[in-house]
Amino acid sequence: MIHADVQNVTLAQLGAGSFQRVAVKGANTWDTTSGDENFYNLRTFEHEWVFNDANNEESSYITHCVEIYQGVSVGADYLFESVAIESVPDRPNGGWPGNMGEERARLLRDLYAGWANPSTGGVNGSESERDAIASAFQLMVWEITHENFDAVVAEDMVGQITFEFGAIQRQFDGSGQDVVGDYLTQMIVSLSDGPLQYAELVGWTEENAQDQSRYIPAPGVMMALTGGLALSGRRRRS
Image (cartoon, rainbow, N blue to C red; front, side, top):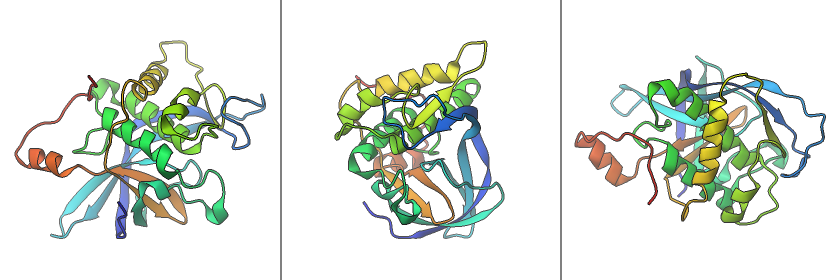
């Protein structure tokens, strides 16, 4: 589904998340490492946006970055074009990684369906664990949109998701439990524990800013929210 409107939004703040040590090397295939990757402390946070709705009242969105290059700044205003999720990220001059296309979008939809809250667009989880979940979720978004998979279909791409090799690598230097790593493992497993689920997503693209993905509640979810039903907890597959 293509959304052709323009979103005039302000980045109010960074939401749940943390800094993670990440290396990005577009020349790597999914199963290789050069050994000279440079790891940087990158922001793996949710983005909380505010805008004025049709009634001129302030409303908000939560999005996730699908483009590891470029950036967005807290307090800055942006005009994003809303496009089909398959059409982001949109790199200048057709540069890497290019549009995610249909199969990667299927993985992203399943990730959102299993781990995000359709009422907010952000990840599920208690306050104490949400930062770790959000960081793992953002890393998964980058892996899905940037990795140089050999596989053609989404189901086969799942087996090529790794953060030890490939275009997106993560380094953990802490001495305690790697909670973010634990959630990464759970998220990878969740992509392969049954038929891929669907979530209605839209892409935001802007030439001079990081492209974003946004979760749009389905009509049935909107009716439940309007009726005051609370949606909480991660969706579990049967």
